[in-house]
Structures are given as C-alpha cells and as structure tokens.
Amino acid sequence: MLQNIRLERIMDVLIQEKAVDIQTLATYLGVTPKTVRLDLEKLENAHFLKRVHGGAILPNQTNTVPLHFQRDENLPKKALIARKALEMLHEGDVVLLDDGSTSLELAKLLGGVNLTVLTNDVFIINELMDKPNIDLYVIGGSLKRNHGRYVITGEDSIQFIRKYRVNKLFLGISTIDTEDGLMIFYYGDRSTKRAFMAAADEVICLADSSKFSRTAFTRVAGVSELDTIITDSGLPEEEAVRYRTLGIRVIYADK
Image: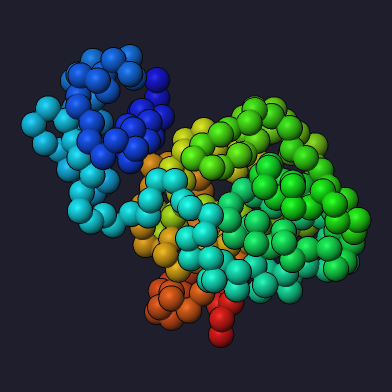
C-alpha cells in the first residue's frame, strides 16, 4: 500500500475515533508496527496528530484544514465565490465542474444560459439534471463514498475526460500554497484532477481564504498551472500579490 494512502486512512480512523494505537493500525493497514511508527512520525511532523505512548491522538490545534470538509463550512464565502465564477461563463461554454462544495454552489446558479457541463460530483449531477439549458455529461467511473461526499473517480473517469476538451475547469482543492502547490487529502483523486486540468483551456481554482498557506497529503500540481484563482477578502492582499507575480489572476469575490 502506498504511503499516501496509508496516511489518509490513518487520519480517517483518527478523526472518527480521536485516538489510535499502533498495533490496531498495523493490523488494519496490513503493515508492520515499525511502518506505522514512521507514518505517525510523518503526520506529527506535519502537525496532523500528536504521538503518545503506543499510538497517537488528535492535537488540540492544527495548521491544516480538516481531512473531510463539511459542505456547509464557510458557506457564505463559497456562495460569493460561486457568484463571481458565474460571471466568467458565457452562452455555449463547455465547462468542467470538479467535485467540491464551492462547485456545488456554482451549479445551483446555472441554468440562465445554455451550457455544456461535465462533472464527477453526484450532488452537482443531482442539481443540474432538471435544468433544460444544461447539456449534462456525467463522468463515469468508480463511486467513492467518503463522509457525505459522493464522487466518481478512478481510471474510467480519466479515460472518459480524455475524449473531451472544455473551455473552463472550475477546480476544487483542499489546500493551496505558492511553494507546496495545489494539494488534496485523498491520494486516489490526484490522477483524476490531473486529467481534468489537462482537458481544460482555462483552469480556474475556487478556493476560499481558509485553504491558503496550508498543507495536505498529496500534491496535484504547481500553482503556475492555474490561470485564475477566485477567493474572498480573507486572503491578505500581500499574499495575492505572490500569486499575481507568478502570472495568475487573483479575483476577490467580495471586493
């Protein structure tokens, strides 16, 4: 099992149980206790957990966002970002909506103009299926059920998207940083997101300010692969300048 997958599963157990022990994790993951200790050390160094005798616990504070986002987290900011993203859409555009709560907020606003929309998010599919102005393409593949998220992913999804070209990709990520790049918590989504980016003429990252200057498990891409970031005024202007100097357009949804 790849280390990134083990790390994700360790955090999954820890968030649910609040504490984990090494022997139980070793049995669950099918690895040696030594491997688990090394994994816990890596997670502790990244401030995801605190090691204790025989296992690990959640720290009181962490410099990362939660492993599994809640769909109502920062919802007012995400709704503002979605409204700003809507202004970038034009009649006849072919759009790819990556999974995520901000993309879902954007989907709720669609229907005023004729668009072709491709997506792998079941909530977005449900939102768009009854809108007659939306020509909806459902990306096929394996359904991932994960703490209230229902996302279609895997090799079939990658092969599906390679057959198409889209004007705009609205990309969802877990964290963003000028040095670490675009990162996510679930390793299995990386290849799918890479394929989405390769299919798009323009890559637009929808990221509320809580996602900046933080880290996650898996790097998807460097920030230089983005064309535009739409965020909120919680992102300091001096930090926005760092992205603009890299040639990325940064748009504040609430300014």
